[in-house]
Image (cartoon, rainbow over all chains, first blue to last red; front, side):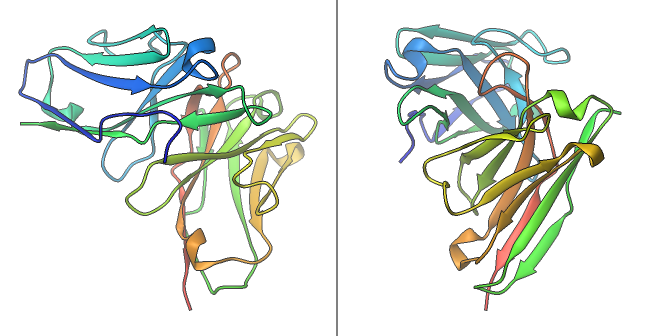
Length: 111
Length: 120
């Protein structure tokens, strides 16, 4: 069972806006920045959002991140077929001498 | 080109030892933390630990402390993950990833992963 809770699945049609949630607690999301990863089928993860709402170079602006309290969200606008992938949130958890924690992942299907 | 290179696959028997590697190039390897991340078949990502190649300072996840050893040789820009006695349950893809200068969990460069299969 993951420390961070994500919905196991999400879906949308091309052009739609989809959001993926990531729920934690005061020891992780509540006090630290959040990062998001995209994992396309059969490939290694890539960093999609860092420091809660920053995009690495090369990531299109239709991907955005936000945080409120102990929850974070990834929003994808103008959904495209190539966005079909697994998405993971990650942050630092201050408990147990500190550790990186990931969400369980959300499989996004583009209908 | 900035990259982390890992070998594709290893097949081992239960009880055997294994050391897999992750070689960095295109950047100053010794000045960025390197993490190891496990992905079991059909499952999510799990952080195993992180090492700073500059001085080999290492942090382990409580879930993996004592079960694996993380090391690095900055002279050849390579990080390692090793097991002394493999179990069938160690079957997984193991990724190495470079941590951004800021943010404990922001990994901006990933290796392609090493598939470790443990089977009798």
